[in-house]
Image 1 (cartoon, rainbow, N blue to C red):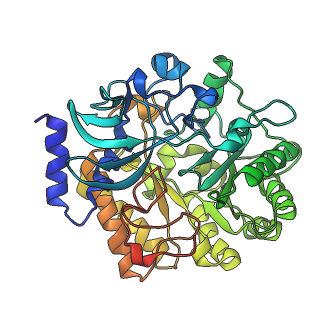
Image 2: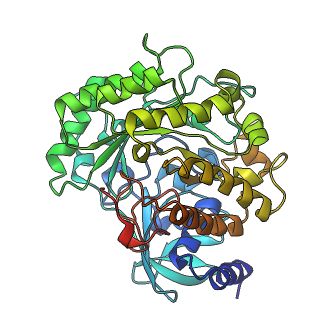
Amino acid sequence: MGSRTALVEDLMERFPHVPREAVFKEDLLRGGVAFDPSALSDNEDGEVKPKSYFIFSFDHGTLPELGEAALRRPPEEIILTGGPYDLRRTVVSVRVNPASPYRVAADEDGVLGLYLDGKRISDVGVPPMPEYYRHTLASGKSVMEVAPTIQWGYLIYLTVFRVCQYFGAKEECQYCDINHNWRQHKAAGRPYTGVKDVEEVLEALEIIDRYDTAKASTAYTLTGGAITKTVSGRDEADFYGHYAKAIEERFPGRWIGKVVAQALPRDDVQRFKDYGVQIYHPNYEVWDEYLFKMYCPGKERYVGRDEWHKRILDSADVFGARNVIPNFVAGVEMAEPFGFKTVDEAIASTTEGLRFFMSHGITPRFTTWCPEPTTPLGKANPQGAPLEYHIRLLEAYRATMDDFGLSSPPGYGPPGPGNAVFSVSSFMDSLPEEKSAAV
């Protein structure tokens, strides 16, 4: 038995209340997965939905370092089922790492599987190419470029501003590669629109609406980099909000509208609500006061941690606490050089943050940290946080929700192992099915 297999099985035994599917999913998200050429897609000309690079790279290497996976994109996500652990259906966002102990490859019959330490541990399903990806806009741009879908088609991800105005070492969040991802796609000659035209977004949504006959797409997220000045003459609330206004006027009630933006003053948050946004994600990134200052220097400089948290609480008066869902980046708490040295300390700090927000009826969610190599924290911590941290976080997250009588947040699809579609962390996989909310 290889050492990684032994570690995973030990954690499954030690934390039996965490779904075994979530243990594998968190390990794949934190450490990435390698792809045999037999498991790569044929980009937009094939039968498999390819990785869209919808905002960050979420890879453990730059495009030139990924080999054939940079030319033939891997699938957007994979589904794990069956195998010796009898895994229930588990949707996992693809994060490529050629050096990972996990590998997706086809067997002699052409059936894809996930291999760990050389042993097949599950079957692998890949997302079929959606019909709407086969159609282009009048400009020739692809739907995948303008309005990609993730979470197995549940969420339309509209990164309408592909860079961030927190720029340089003194402002950029130390774990974030949004600006580098923009640069690497442009350097590779890939289409990667910096500011998306609202009419093109509407055109792409019309194509999705026309060909998504099963209505699998249920929500859209408007997001992009922070705006400290203006983009196209608009401040942050007006820039992101005017897309929501246009979408809601053209497609009233078709999708759940969500926006990921900074924690803005209450009047700006009200503008989001007035434009038709239903769910607000003012991400707080990391709870610890010192780590927020060190890892989010731009946000500390322009807003400040205490004011950020105050604005999150204020936004609940506008949207309702249940519809304010701030994200944090799970794992950066343990990143060197400033992070906690033990899992106990990191979990205690993160749980303090969870209790703070949940005591006000606000349910945070999290993205599992991928240490992208072009970021300061990725360079210093190529292995990310220990898997034990991620497993214990799932345990602490569910326990804290139970303490405050909260259920799974809206806009994320169904909760529970075998049901969840949220692909960039396992928080929805680890919640009980019976606590489902409106999806």
